[in-house]
Length: 330
Figure 1: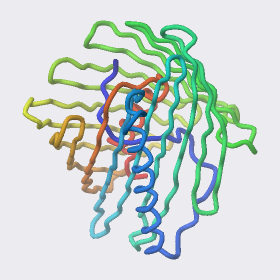
Figure 2: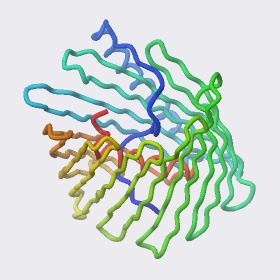
Figure 3: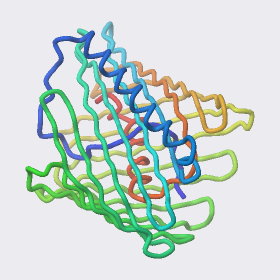
């Protein structure tokens, strides 16, 4: 129902309450990162072969590389994602891995952390799915493990989901995520998301309108935060020329409660190598409260099938907004 340019992965909607130590063995660290990418991709590829392919409902592999140039300094962020969902009559299974690596110090040190999730669900009746799973975060000197419980309803025009997410068994915080979308017509969908953590007084909310018809797809969105008073407005879209080429454009502006302003304006294009596999390259300007930078974003992605979980689709939309926008720097 919603437009979603392929990108990557898991979103931490609240500021993390831990500090990730910098690696002092940068070269060995980079080799470990690449090994993780290879192993993750191999495991997901196995899911798409042999007998498992008959039950595969959805799969994606993607890698995003963002390069920022401030004056004479270069900063790089990279994100890898692998995900698969399968069905066995009324039983549904899924797993995903998302790896974030950042080099924001201009000295070659890499900060690296990985999210994972594994879940199982039961389709009680057509359009209704309940399930639960395990989630985790792994980083240098940091390991967190938690769980999630979810339920969803889908019909031809409406879809909704509720997810309860405990990020760490050892903490009291419980995150509640409520999603809903309504298709006004086959081309236009309106959606909303509310995210609340039990340890915070406020909440985050997202409002979006998506358009997808023929060779044009676009999305306009707004994000607010009742506790931090930060607001984001953005728009992004693609035009498919129909000959394996497409044009991309994105704009986003962030205003913080302290009065700081950030913005991104980017344009680019993509080429479909084979069915479902794209290479995209976007170039744009990044303004960080008066400091200008040039951002170059390269994406390699593959996607097939349709998602089973509604909340995962909403999360991916929010992440794609993030990755095209101001937060792509972090």
